[in-house]
Amino acid sequence: MNKKNVLHLDGHLSLQALLQFVFRREEVSAIALSERVLSKAQRSFQALQERIQKGTPIYGVTTGFGDSCTSYVDQNLAQQLQKNLIQYLSCGQGDSISVYASRAMFLIRFNSLCQGISAVSPQLLQHMLQLLELDILPVVPEEGSLGASGDLVPLAYLGQVIQGEGSCFYRGRIEETRAIYQRHNLKSYQLKPKEGLAIVNGTSTMAGLMTENLTLTAELLRLSQITTAWQCLVLNGKREAFGPFINEVAKTNPGQGSIARQISLYLDAENYFPQRGQDVGVGGLKTQDFVQDRYSIRCVPQILGPFFENLQQSWKNLEHEINSVTDNPVVDEEGNLEMGGNFYGGYLCQSMDFTKINLAHVADLVDRQVMMLIDEKSNRGLPANLVNTEGLSIEERHIHHGLKGVHQTVSAITSELMQKSIPSGIFSRSSESHNQDKVSLGMSAATTCRQMLTGVYKIMAMQLVCLTQALDIKKIRLQGEDSQRLYQLVRQSVPFVQQDTSLGGSIAQLAQDLRQQAFTKTDLFIGNNSEC
Image 1 (cartoon, rainbow, N blue to C red):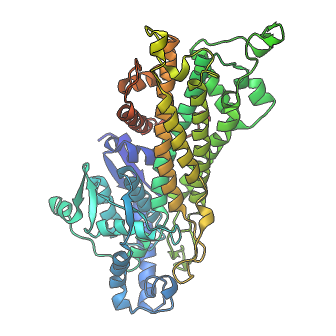
Image 2 (image 1 turned 180 degrees about the horizontal axis):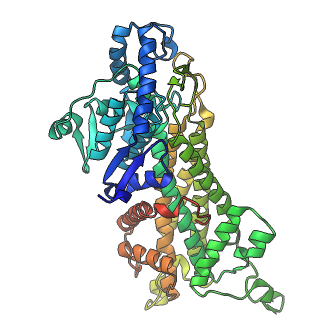
Image 3 (image 1 turned 45 degrees about the horizontal axis):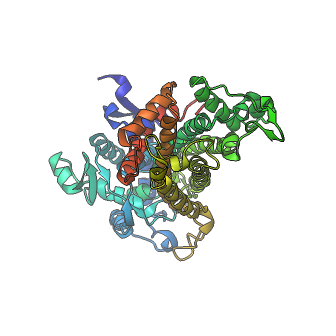
């Protein structure tokens, strides 16, 4: 067995390992737990058992949950209490999270318990490891989490699968978990005291969804830089706005500089070096060309620079979260019970809310850039609505409207995206008899972000249809490798528009292809590389 295909868990899970396991699962042949993890888990589990035997009131173990924590539970009923917890929390609603998000959620929850201070048994860890290796993943509804006390309702569905109940994703299908257990001769697991609470009391569902969201977001950021370079090409835009003096000397924000350098590299690859604004001549009282471009070209480094920096910070927040212990209570090295609120998903909520705001800016940028291409008053010599006028008489040209409807759809979707971009975290509600009186709503932020990503990928696909149409009309042949690959991907779904035609299905396919492409590029999005 090739060691590079084994996921080793010893207390730290890197983002690279997480993304490989989630999006390229076939590359991971096994998961290995270190002896240190198991021995540490055994110590905290034993410390809890000793306190149970002494009759110590332990939250969620020998007491009720939440506001019911003053109700003492006899130690003989402690095991049933955990099963009941999973049962009463299994009331989620809405669409299911994706297989990717479910796999990320499961691994993140597992890694948290592997820290060895949640007082779960080594037997639970070994059972969860077995399910992960078989890729038996819970089907999880996305509605029901307040984001504190963690993702209680969504994680209850993980608790179901661990016990051999509920539904699961298995080899591309949704199956009854009981049937999959029978197929693999697995025994249903009986939760021990504290184990149900340790499974549900954490931020792993919002973290799992955030893993998928950030991956898709990073690809959108990359695409936005390529489309801006293409916009320059087809509109004969200026390059000074992307130069080092503007973006590294006059202003020193690292994200802005990174975006400008990358756009410049894409333009370099096309050997595009247009006349500078300072060299434009004057005829009469008019300049002979534009001396500078509209903001939707000229200010892209300033628009996407904050996005780049927010994204980098979000990856850091996620890495901290996936290596944290987010349930309550936990056991320290001396066997003492420590109680706190690490299940509060504040960092993840803010990351997702900032991502939503940035996605709204990207959507608005796409809308403005598409408008420049469509409108003959701003597209610098391209035909109105990017109609293919070749071979058409003057009269015939007037009955064709090319990509006019595409821009109308972009504008409609952009408006909807703006509505979703309001931060979720500001809508905290007191809940659960005012015990959970301040909640993060991190799962709500992650879910709304997911919805926004679906819309932004649609309008990005439509922008690419417009840009490839413009490139072909101007007979520009792309030379850069990244640009060529993207052009070919567009043309696989959407050919050059010869005359008015229905594009809805082709655009939907392109949007899906772009999303799927994101999951193959995860190594580009994180790590020590400062460039996007």
